[in-house]
Image 1 (cartoon, rainbow, N blue to C red):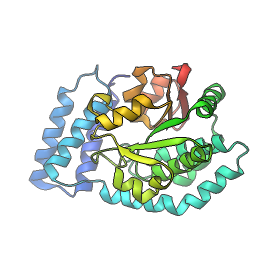
Image 2: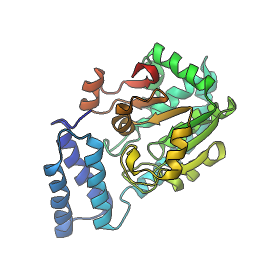
Image 3: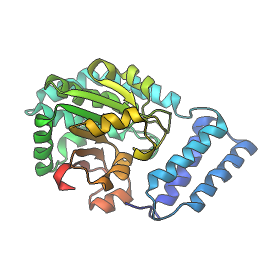
Amino acid sequence: MRTERDCIPCFYRQISRTLTYAGVNGERGRWIKRKAEAIIESASFDEIPARTTTLIHRLIRRETGVDPYQQIKETYNRLALERLPELRRMVHENADRLEGSVRVAIAGNVIDFGIFESVDLDKSLAESFSLPLSLADYRNFAKAVHSARRILYLCDNAGEIVFDRVLIETLRDMDKDVTAAVKGIPVINDATHVDAVQAGLHVCATVIDNGNDGVGTLLESCSPQFMERYRSADLIISKGQANYETLMQTKDERVFFLFKVKCPVVAGFLNRANGDIILTGGKSL
């Protein structure tokens, strides 16, 4: 993937949205906005969008001195936890528990405030259980799960990680050793260690952070602890578009990507429609 013209308006919207969440306006807000816009103006179209987004949010956090999305993360962790019994019920009522867990996990990927300003969890769940998954990719994924012992689960957003918890619980009940990796430093509404504990991930998995604030997973910036887990994993479950952007070029057959298509650039790259649910990876890359 690379940056396309359609990425540029999205970058600008993220600046305005994040400054609003940070409560910064007036001359200070205009100054930060100009600094962030300079990052966009110097961005290479040969680079993946996640790298530019990382620089934008790093600048805004540094200049405002706050985590703009902290309240949103706490809110959606709480809202998702209220749904946990329902999510578990949906999985147990599905003929294939693993497939149902995958569909629940993908539904949670809609909780993305780097792209959206509001989310409809009911709609996302309904779509996730009605839209098709690639049968070949699901079979490859199920085979990889059954043969794996050590699984590394790359988390995406706060709130979403409660949906991930349902899949991780299924993997745990299959006697898998699961490590859930979150961000080391806040960025957008991505989950950190604090969020993981709020969501109860530590009950069903070993929780680590990746040591950085990169949007997606920028392997060259990750901590030695994370990289040790990454290299030793038998299977890597990667959640979200940004993780897809940053890891798909590795062509690692251990990596399976789970996400909802949420922008025209990714939709065009995959030849899919916005809103589609994606499970891809392994030998299909």
